[in-house]
Length: 487
Picture (cartoon, one colour):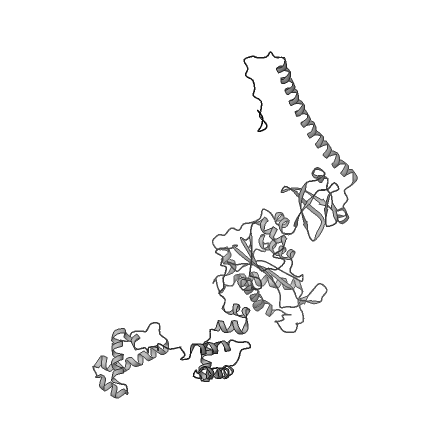
């Protein structure tokens, strides 16, 4: 008779069942009486008969030792068990010996049997690990270890981008040949894990640095090895001031993508970008001169920032984008390009620069131009819009010039004479004024002509009606009632 394989059993249980089957084999295959097997194996006849009945009913699975119905339960009063658990969950965490000593007088007072040290330790060991972590280490440690995570999963490229900043674990030379630690800003496509844009610099994270990185991420790349581009559907970030700034919110509205923010103080939901930063540290920076792991003294710098950028570019485009990802099992570049995906692009690079690299503000055109940040901006075109509300856009790096829009239509580029080094002469202002007055006079003449024409026609009709004979048959026109009490 062939032994059948066991299902849903541990290795120890399989060995146990096979050993019991070998004891029963002489009876099953050769007809040896169970009494002789009991005498030879020092097993009781009752036990052998029970094994045989269970084998014939369930096969090898019936020979597995049945667990006790009270296995895992402690024969202790429920209140005593709760007392032991409550003492073990106190802060600071007490030892099992301390808990054992403290329950002894309580047991004597209540008339309970005093548990042994081993029994108290067993109760403590069976505590829920999550409960023990929450009691001893706090909410943050519990969330890191036991909280159920919600992972955002993108279904296609450019559905979700993740963006963040991190200081790199490397020291390089700055412009003054002084050691400095650069910041790394990156935008990663959630679906493919490909890098859409990145930037390395010594400036702290800001809305403008983020805008520059997004500009590179969205527009087409000059490097033929780098194809990732387009406008994302959603941008997933933390609550940094640069990501929650009014400027980035306006950019999201203009480019029609949705900003999404992770829980405050909880970066676990942004695992893609965090894992990418770890990859850069572990596979790239550790091999570069000047690399300084956390909690170690700064290493002597050997590279400049442009040299680091060149090496990082080669690593990202030639290594990271072409190595299969552990989760997707495909190279990031190949996964992003699969399926003939066509990214959504802005109309032009100029429009993208206008939205990303300039800040929008509302202003009213005064008689002497546009007032902004204590400066005055002029252009002859503004003469026709005095008193109108307009939107201006300016580059924070250069406020010598602003772009002026009226009802979403571009008007002109107004300049500040003090900053631009370019003056608008009195002659140009006079010409603009005369041109504006000429336009207004033409409008006035056209309106006056229409009024005179209509009044002349009306006057002619009234004269004709006055000179015509009265008609007795004509009904009397009823008077219009204007008030409730009119009779």
